[in-house]
Image 1: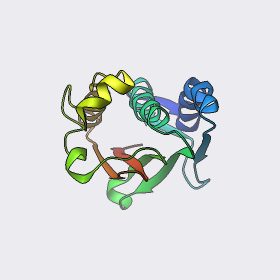
Image 2: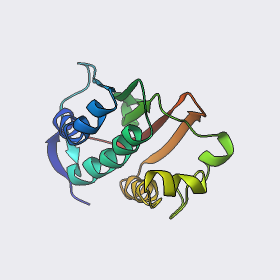
Image 3: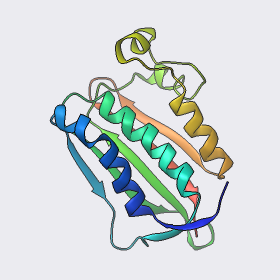
Image 4: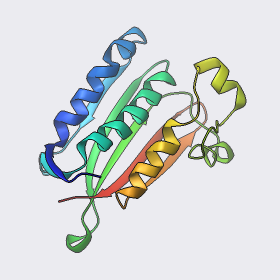
Amino acid sequence: MENLDFILRHAIEEVLDLVRERARMNQLKMRIDYPKSIPDGINGDSTRVRQILINLVGNAVKFTHAGEVAVEVRIDGDEDSKMLKISVKDTGIGISGENSQKLFIDFSQADASISRRYEDTGLGLSISRRLIELMNGVIWVKSEEGVGSNFSFRLPYA
């Protein structure tokens, strides 16, 4: 893991640019919610943060057929343990409660037909979980089948 200064908003914009064409083809709105109270410059592993965002945003676009994909950034925690909370929200197919527990396991899918239908290996979320844990963070999902998903992760930041 590296600790380098980078501009988080730019990293998010770069990730959205990577999936913008696919989102446009699905007529999806892409949105960033980055309040002015959050510093642009942070210190961390920009490469790993981008990789996590590529996995989460890429999945959101892949599994959303109408509506929007949004990336929201917030400060979480108190003065002594400030955490950066990044959420990727979509209006996609969603996941049932029991299946959402399987998502962060290697080669696992919420539904076996997903890997065939969407050509997915089931590694992106488990890799993201491992990277986040290496950075002393945590990832979780809230989802409702047919309504959408909200994948969020928290990382310490400086």
